[in-house]
Length: 251
Image (cartoon, rainbow, N blue to C red; front, side):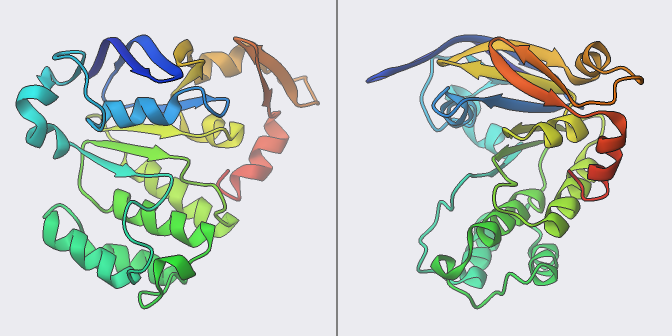
């Protein structure tokens, strides 16, 4: 279990927190909110990228101050943008990761990229936004971990690749694994997440069970898409017929 206890981060013009949150194993957590609400900053802190007080963030009762290496071996991260030089070629990036992280499955990663025509000899700056997202996703999903963290992984990705990405995320899950995904796409939340966590102005304003949310706002007689509000943020919930049509495309 990941526990966040009174997390408070002060940046010049922005304050993250205070946040208290528990993320249990075996669930998919969708983090959403308006741009600038603190979602990515929260992920960076959760992954040890920003310092916090001892025991503010713990993974199975381990904290970053005393167990940084052990914790980093628990998770893999799919960043919103590449964290490596865009002058490198795809294969150079992957071989570097392979040498640094024994958990990384290079062969599976190359297979996935080849299938979706992300060619290994291309330089990073030559890749489209969708191709970069596919590259980052493949690195994360094929790095063995207990916690998979993704920051907007579907932005710019075509329907075929998106469908397979969602299938791989579903296969990844079992009783002792956790997915934390930042997304603003209601279709993804509805079809993948167990819980939705809403950020606003640096704070968690809502944590909802997606199934319970669906039961509250969806009826079998309703023919229109349903619009509702969580903490001032408008969401559109799809009726069953529309949902089945979208599920063919993995969204």
